[in-house]
Image 1 (cartoon, rainbow, N blue to C red):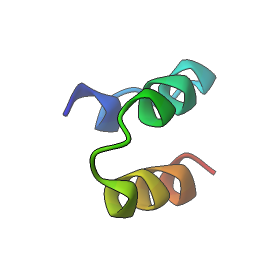
Image 2 (image 1 turned 90 degrees about the horizontal axis):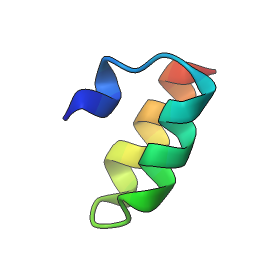
Image 3 (image 1 turned 180 degrees about the vertical axis):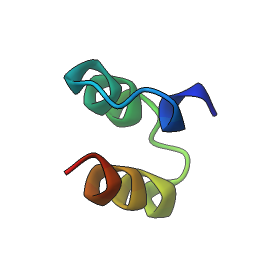
Length: 33
């Protein structure tokens, strides 16, 4: 997933759009924070 490479606020929006895997979303959110 390119979202992992995106470390900008925009990545948060992309993560929110991908609701298929909430587990990865939470992991990415914590990673971005």
